[in-house]
Image (tube, rainbow, N blue to C red; front, top):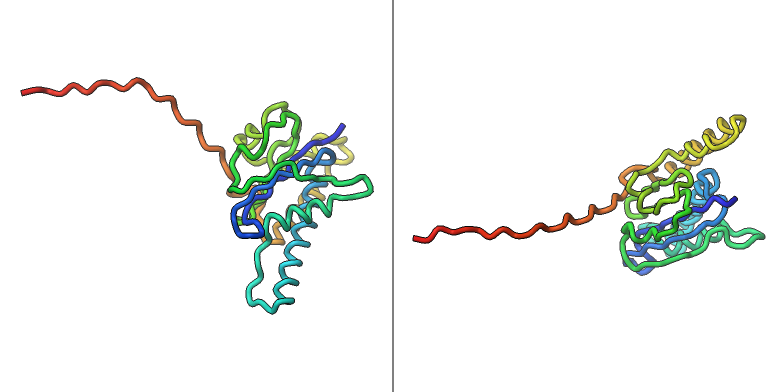
Length: 200
């Protein structure tokens, strides 16, 4: 059975306007695979920015943009079996909960915010609930995945997950810190009471 996941990348696009892209990963969406994928794609993206600055003799290195990271994630996930991750939706705006879609069989959700350099990990297994529910419940420790495995694989998977998180942190990203929270629904308005005024 496939471990379904989505990867949200949000921040500035190649033309400096806000963008949010949702990638869908039908198989191998568990943390040891996806964190490895994100780490490789982010390292490649940052390297491209350094190379570009050197090529054009620029003093400042441009930050990684959404389009660039999306392309590198797709590239790093592509194998003989095709794209491991593919673009499912694109939005010319900052991230909100609606960008998660409404797929009810997702097990893991990864949100990369380029402006704040954060990676949030949500879900933690099949619940049958909306991705917005996973966001509302808050980030989860990716090591939780190991608890679903046979005991002989748990310690190795936890160690591998920790190393991947440390490697992503080494690229300047915090993991599971300062994550977006869904905006509360507005409270329904009650009937307005008439204000009685005294007359002279």
